[in-house]
Length: 304
Picture 1: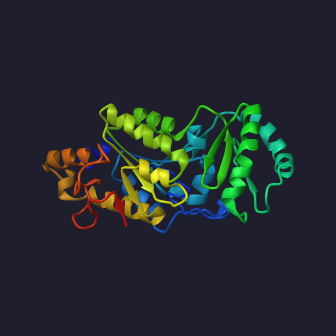
Picture 2: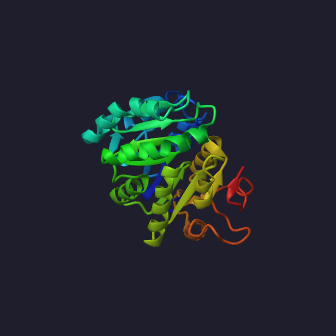
Picture 3: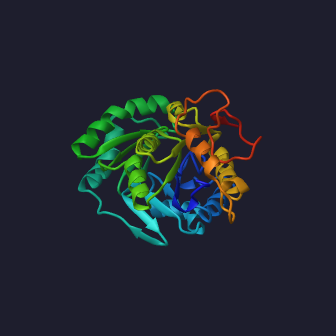
């Protein structure tokens, strides 16, 4: 990224990555310093994007993301796009309305426990169990009936952190990330995520690497979705760790080794960084980060 910042793409999830997970999704605001860190990075790389399951406009409004110059927000897993205040979105599939009408009766029929809530995203509906007495048991109770409902409506069921989302098929964060990378002619790609829906974007990073485009998958660690950290190249401590990561990356782009100053060569550091994110199983002591000042990050995958 430091070697060729104009063609770098940095993308991140919203909930659980930029913003801590909270009981009420309408109150999920970014971690302290997150928007400021993104804004600094956006001034130094070609593309900064948020790819989220939320409606794009909702993420912008809730997160104050309009403050980030040039930001692209892909909502509903890439089905929607917000950029420079302009929102583009496809029509809502008829199956979504059918699910909206059927959900109250279904939840009553299966005796969904107290605290189960429905989040209407417009083009998708999410059933949350986080506020129930036993979120995992409630999720298990609802998975099969919600799956049947989604199938009848020609939609798909997407599991997450104590949430089951019914949404239109055919779009995921991996498809969205690869499409954006192609559109922006990205030569390096970083994606940060925390939930099961982000695994598709991590897989996209691996495919991009196979195509010769260096990339790094960064996990915002959570005990609720350990498989995300296992699939990542780099692991940080939740949203506060993401803020530190983005801030350090923005700082690294100003270092002499970053190659941004007149007449400075960055070929050797660039090769080193490409190797660092090309194989998450590199040997002991091998850096798994990009351009971070010595002593700030360790050679470990896990950044504390």
